[in-house]
Length: 53
Length: 245
Image 1 (cartoon, helix red, strand yellow):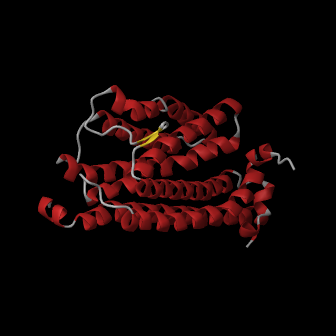
Image 2 (tube, each protein chain N blue to C red; image 1 turned 180 degrees about the vertical axis):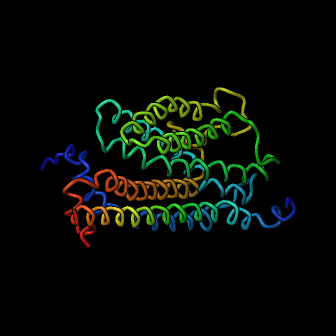
């Protein structure tokens, strides 16, 4: 690992930190989008129930 | 023309405003990330002593700054919610916590990656590193405490107390490199200025702005879902075009 790291510093920096950081951002965005869809669905269902009552 | 900003403290008014602002913040953030990466990896030179490894700072430093800044913003919103019982403040505090936690995680992760080639180790129980780890735990504690209480108003109050008490950790993180002998280097960017090379500064501040805009976009998106969830019985929610679909 140490030798590979010294021989490929830019790959190490890219894959280790930037790729991980952007993956974290992508997961967070996906979670926020999912939460939005789920909440909207929940609210719509609630409206349907209230209308039927 | 004076704008009455206080009206946006009501979820009814803030919800559509946030919806309009999100695309602007998201697009600006994506552009600045691209510019920042170009400046950091193509324009900025390699460091004289650290070589290419120093380029981790373009994500590490913005993530560290934002992890502290977002905590203070979260604690301020939590305090506002606790003192004035304003609904939106508590919702904002809840929306900020996951993003702050992720920035704290990225700061710790990238710091470890920088530490291995520079210090020869991934981790040391240094004051700066340990206090940043405590910050991550405080974020996780806030999220867990809030999730563990069913009544949202009680959850807001309990989590707000944790956020306010935990804010004492932020100055400890910032001044840890001055107060103790740490392996972590001192602050390169100070209120009085910086000794960094100019293109490195440009790359760093561009990435900082990109991360900040990203955080705002994500937090606004999350708070919109929280508003919908909490206000689902309100008449104005039923009248929203996205709900009426």
